[in-house]
Length: 316
Length: 117
Image 1: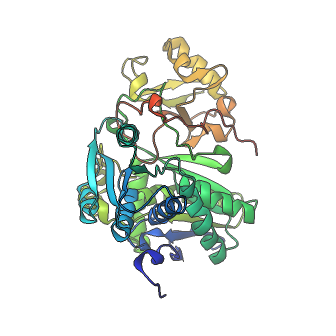
Image 2: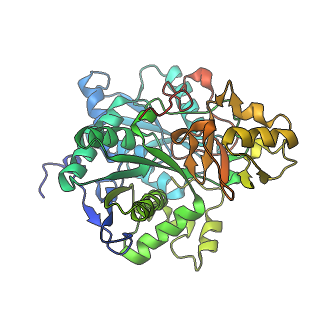
């Protein structure tokens, strides 16, 4: 494939059958390899779309500064696009995210403001909103509430899957900003009303949740529960086990959230086998394993060691 | 009918610090009522006016009960119920959530949106 510039190479990622991990010949599991985007994650799609929409709307003009709360991938994607397009970018990121993410952001010229580990992304969002209020000339694209995030997946991820696999019966992806599930999910349902849209939500250990208050919380503005068929909570252990299986069985080196999505995909796959149905289950490999190498989960001798290595860390 | 219930850190004041407690009931609603008899005050933190509180997520064997039958979801012996706080996106962490006054309201809140397929 030939493209006119690096940003034009976003999307059109491979959809590959996983013959060893598929439960049966009639219940097939397919991986959408989003690590094959220019900066190595699915976030290139919404990042580019949000920037170009803001340019069209006249909100983002030469010389402006982009501000974004991010746990990594969106910031990395925005930073790359900002560098090529000549914007300054400031990212607000929880301090308990991996060193790889910080280096990648710095590499593309992003300035990083660390938000306290306590509260994780919730706190990063709050801090970013405070900074935005103090700097009214900065442009916060705000991936959690920006319709162009969902729009990117409606315009690209969904159509690509449907074109490659019109028989798709299930679409499974991680639940973060909810953009992937809302956008691709809406598109697929329009084309194939019976398709099941399944969310895999990361469930961390107690160290990460800590004393989160149940009376307040955060639900991304983009979230619309009516798009989802169901939603699974996937614990760190299951996510790690599946991430390692993806590597050992199919040779795919993926990030940990992809293991969580695979776990949910195999869960719905088992159900299909039990009910004697055939299925084409697509799940999203949101990024490669590179940014999580320092966790040690890929080389740990046992699953137990790998899970222990992940204690207290954000992996999605 | 024994149901394992995983309790989040913030609610362990009601369970003497226990991470997992046992309960019984044919539905989530009955289970919470049963928990209330031994862990007074916990029910009110989970349920408000006959439905789950907005930022409380409850999972039956890892599946979100809002996509099953909410608090009327039926339970079977040996099930595991997990209670968790709602978190920001895929990567949330400890302690304090975003301040709602700063605008992180979820206009499409999970608890207010019941599946109507």
